[in-house]
Structures are given as structure tokens and as C-alpha cells.
Length: 231
Length: 281
Image (cartoon, rainbow over the protein chains, first blue to last red):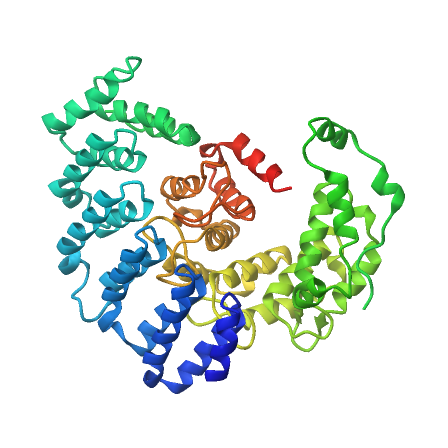
């Protein structure tokens, strides 16, 4: 394994060498867990998004164990780069599948706080917004009812009304049945007033219209979204 | 090792009406691309050597490009077919990436695809090849790349695509294959290499393609995935493969094909993408 690690280190994106490591680790068994975690950590220190390293690390966790420090590892990586989508993905794996954390329902509350904080520091970051959705999985009602989330959207938009991720998330919440607060309505109106062309009675349609202007690359997507807002 | 291409001077200089039109826009340098492809066979270059193991796939990429540019006749079909078949392992039914290289599904698909380009599937023992692939399906429905057991949704796509081209898709357990692919679906609507793996445009193409071929697109939330895919478009017009990564022209294929399969390609800005691609020329 030492020999293979040397080759893997110089060829970290080669499929075959990672598969060989896995084949070897399988034979060594749980004793290999620590060294495999150390090795992937080393590779990820050079390239924190190396897909092969992450695949291997996920396999090691599920086959050989070592969950204890994984959430902390995700914290560390996200501290270094909050934009690291791979780390957010790993976080989701840990939160949902770690045998020692209690599962998604148990972790949801603290994770929402963590994610909202990450969003407030860097709202223009695709990953935590998606992660938030993941935390509420198939439960739209719970998502809509969590005030922290609609508050976060509002806070972000008050600072930067062109933040597409916030607008998009807000749109989803509205479509799921969020009853906009007066403050939220006021913020949207203010956005519309900066562009006198728009002026919609329906707040979701208003947000859609704003998105078509703020995210012209995806104007067709937002136009389509608007057609789904029938009632 | 035989050359896979013969330069046909007359074909290279003759231009079709389409090419004239593109040339007038001053954009796609089709002739230069054709020339690059047919003369890429430099056996003594370092690049050629380190890519020796995937020559069969390189042949497919080059030849399919020629075909798209209506220049497939620039190569000698018989020579290509002969060379492809010299990569075949009759004992296993698989193809290696080059002469003398071990069989793998990657190169098996490439070989079959190349033969399709020349309409020469007749040279194949389709049942034998189908058996090779069938033997690589695992109990959970996934596919290994070869006898050494590496599993990846890429191999699901490759296996399904190969068998589909050979009209022998029924030889695998399609239901289980689909089940495995669906188990690799993430909450963002995308797919990873294995269950729990980060959504990645390349893996998404493989999973979406496999589901399409097996008539299983109903497992996909087209609007959700379509949105994830159109979010790959960066400000420079190019497409990336995952959130917060840089655009790369290869994702023009993975993302674009996926969008087309799920009928959401109108959600990206095509003009800006085209400009990005031409800037990579």
C-alpha cells in the first residue's frame, strides 16, 4: 500500500490507482481505515475537490469506519474554502449516514444554523443554498415553517437585492406556500421600485420578473418558472 | 501497429457548402480540425505514448468528429476496422484500448461506436460481446469496468449503450441496472459516480443517458435537474461540471447532452456558450 500511495500521490486523478488502493484496503480491513483517511486528507490538502479522493474517502467511511472526526473535517475544509461543493456534499453524507450522529432529523436544527451562517458570510455561494434544501429533503412544509430560512433570504436581499440564490430560494418558498411578511413584501416592492417597469400584484411573479433581469443567462428558465405560478 | 488514418488530400481541400458558410462567419476552423485529427497519429511523441492505452477511445473521438464535419471519408474504413478488431479479445469478448491491452468496457464501447460509424457491425460477434458485458453486471445492478471490479456509473452507461447498439439490451437485468443508477441520484437532482457521490456533470450525462436508453427517464425530475444543469453556465458563457468550479469546454458536451435528453436545453444561453467554445479553439 505504501508503494501504491506513492504512485497515487503523483497521479491523483488516475482511476486505476484509486481502485487498486480500494482493493488493497478491502483486504487489509478496518485496520486500514486510519491510514486511508490520512492519505485522502493529504490528497485533498493539495486539491480539495479531487473527485477520486472523495469517492475513496466515502467508501472507506462506509466500509471500514472512521466517522468520528468526519464532521469536524468538513468544518475544517469549509473554513478554508466555504465554496467547496465537495465538502458540502460530504457534510450531507455525514449528517445523513453517520451511525453516531443520529440522522438528519436529529441534526437538522444545528445544521440549519450552520448553513445560514455560511450563507450570511458569503451569499453568492451556490452550495449552502442547495444544502439547505437538502436538509428539508421531501418536507416542504417544515421548510416553509422555519423562519430562520425566510429571514435569511430577507437579510441577504436587504443587503443585495440582486442575489440570485436568495431570490431563487425565496421563489421556491413562495411557491411552497410561504406567506410573506410585511417586511418581505416591503423589500420586494423596494426592488420593484428600483425598476419601475415591473409592478406585480403577485409577489412570486414579481420575484420571477426580477430574476429574469438579474440572471439574464437563465432568462428562459425564469420565464418558464413564471408560467408555473398559476394561482 | 497499423495507422488508423490515411490522409486524403482531395477530401481535405474540397469544402462543402456548410463549411463555406462557417468559414464566412470566421469561426469554426473545420479544415484545421480535420487535419489535426488525421495527422494526430504521431507514434513517437510523448503524448502519444502516455495515451496509448486509450487509443480506441481516441479513435472514436476523432472519427466521430470527422463524421460530424462530413469528412469520415478522409480515412480508410477498412484499415480502421482492421485496427479496431486487432484490439479485440476473442476469449473474453471485450476490446482493449490498443493492441495487446487488456479488455475493458470503456474501449469495448468505443470499438462498437467506431464500427457503427462505418456501418460495420457485421464484423462483430455481438453475442460474445454481450456476454462479456453481462458478466460484468453486479448483484446490485451496477457494472464493473472489467474483471478487476471497479464500479462507477460511467460503466452503467457504457454497458447499456454498448448493448443497445448491438440490440442486445435484454441480456442484462435492466430493472436492477436502473435501480442502481437511481440509487446514485442526489437531492439536487443530479447523479454521482456511486451512491452518495457528489453530483458531477460527467456522471449525470452517464446516468441520464443510461436512463434514456432504457426508457426510464421518468425517474428524473427534469425541472430540478434542468435547473442544476443550467446553473453550470458561468458568466463567461462556458459550462462547469460542479458548483463553484471553473468552466471547461468538455462540459459543453456532458451538460449540453444531458439538457437535450431531458428537453431543457433552452434554459441555457446558447449564443454565449457557442462563443465560449470558439474561444477555446
